[in-house]
Image 1 (cartoon, rainbow, N blue to C red):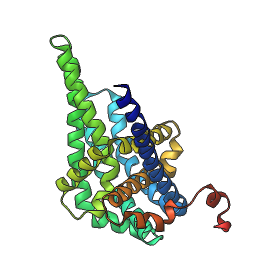
Image 2 (cartoon, rainbow, N blue to C red):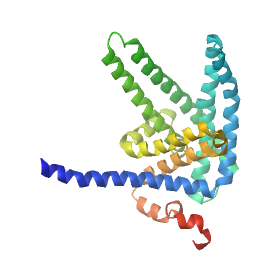
Image 3 (spheres, rainbow, N blue to C red):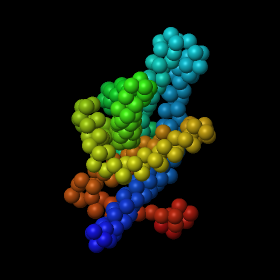
Image 4 (tube, one colour):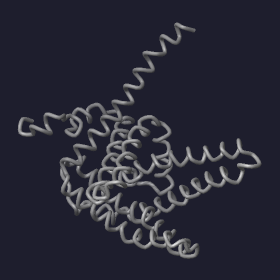
Length: 277
């Protein structure tokens, strides 16, 4: 028993180090993408922020009013449109811009608008399906925890936990979804299925990237200028980098791609002394 435990320890350490390295490589690629194309990505992010600000400015006052009819007829639809229609549409445009930057080391706002137009139906369709499922899971989590609290608390909390866990997986899928829409020429449900399989096959990797994006989300909530300055572009860069590295993981020539990738082969020296590169 002790021997087996001693043998398992090095394997566990190597596994954790490998996952940490993959998360680190993802964030490294995302950082250099954002750094090299800062102006274009900030402009795209501003468009995203303005697009969401309009329905949010309608939906939030409706919820604050306390009027149930106003909340249901105005607030809920406005928030749904903001986060599950407009946001996927614009984020897919950003993902197309990021993919162009990865492939050509160059990109412009025309690539951003091209991506929005080219993948509009699929991005909106995926966003709507995603939104309906997410709302159903969160509603189920609340329902089982509250309604079964008195009669069958263990069952209620178990079902609620299952719903919340499924919602967390769905949250990780959202990071990969814009890049998957851009890179996979498949239908809405096939694209959603692909992102689900990628998350389930690489849970710790996606957990690490998701936690970093969650941290950025919290910062954006408490520091609103960040929301307008680069939040969406930074998250899409992280998701696109994760998808790109996952694609290379399952490709035969991924090692050669990594060796030739400028975004993965730079460090602090290149940040502070770029002229020495």
